Length: 168
Image (cartoon, rainbow, N blue to C red):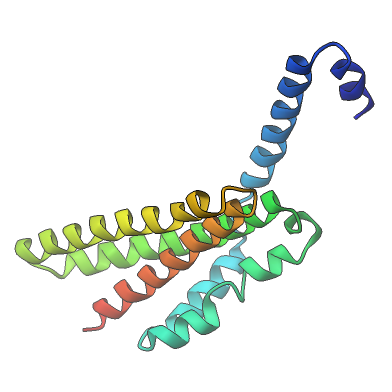
């Protein structure tokens, strides 16, 4: 920080540029972490355990195994840290969602596949619009972790629903 403070005396634009570069480097570093094998297994095992009960699956599996424990560690205490924790969990659910989608599509005829694709596209628009509304409503830094948590939650719900459809 002393180097940045000294440079800030040179001008506000240089100071702002350095702060933005520093912030993006921290955010980029935190976002590069991939889910561990244990984190992936914990969510997958939980989702499998509750594959016939969507509410219980959400209650037991969502945030309890990866997201919340991550936010309680030093790296997860800041807003950007919390965003990364929720995105980390969301990535696991997204992989599971895609697998469940592919498995479901493999068992459908062409008409059903088209309906599944339409349904999924509508859901993506719903998720993006709903989770993006945190930014519109809050207009502050808390919108970031809340939006990331929303995206992870909606992705988890969708992954569980698609798995449920596979069992019908």
